Length: 398
Image (cartoon, rainbow, N blue to C red; front, side, top):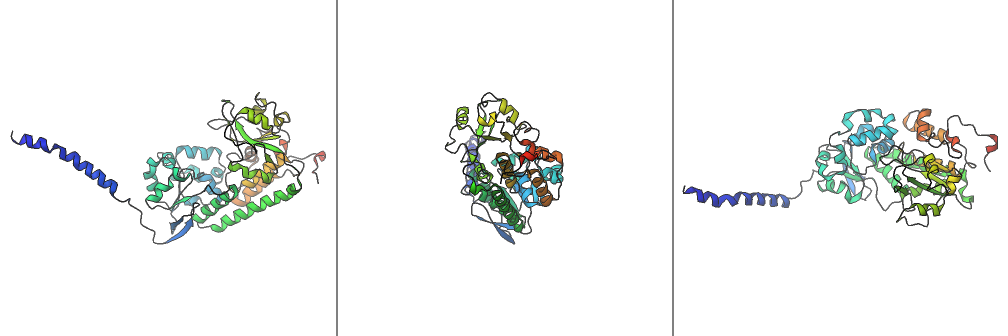
């Protein structure tokens, strides 16, 4: 047929048109969400003022947002949670987080969780469409440019950093409390939490008489694996956990070490007087409990092991926000200075949770938070058990 050659010559036009459309799509400016008609400004921790629409539509959690537990601990506002994560986040929240018992509906109700796409949306940029579908009052995260905020801001969505790398540990915690409580419209709560936090540290300093101490016990905060001897780590001087050492009256035994390489020989050379174990036995990489650690042939020559001064840290997985920090320090201090402090931590935890959330912790819950069972063979750990009564010979030094 005469028309057939003509049709074959035109076959290149279709792919060319598709290519042109793709190029034009790439050149088209990014579609941005319109500015809210009524908004208040929230200062993100990178210094950016973020307009948040009124009334507040709720919070979506993305990568490194420290989880819904810490948010609830600081805001007491479960009604503002739009999406807390997916199946994995929900399982972890229910397994270890005290807030899942204080706010059981957040754990139980499906509306807080995206079981199909939530885990991807938290950290994978390919899941950004899931986040966009919530039309949130604010998206919160950390992790700098590696996280979701740059992408969300590119399309004009209200996105707030909860941490920023120039701030030290305490100031970072205070700033995070201020941001989250401001988002839910209760900035006074943030300031009250900070004031109570500072007061607790001041009280501990007074009880310990830190200014009169000539030296502090040398300690390590670390973990090692019962399954894989190559897996262990230290909280070095460069780690944010360093903020807990001075108020507890202890000195990090890794002070003169850069942290660039971790091996058993270095830990043996540090030879701490006390070891605080972090992590959990039910993590993906389970860490040794105190008894396993003290029976591990790698560590038996350590002074802390010989004197049975190895302890699982208080609160691993139980609390995580600004409320828990002074209690964390109190645990470290009572372990390090049992002759200077009354055994009051157990009651302090119960009183604080009761006053903040009108929730009475059971003795079983307190045992779990204080790792009573795991610490049973460690020196002086009986001070954390229920109904503990110190002997007359254990009077405090004055």
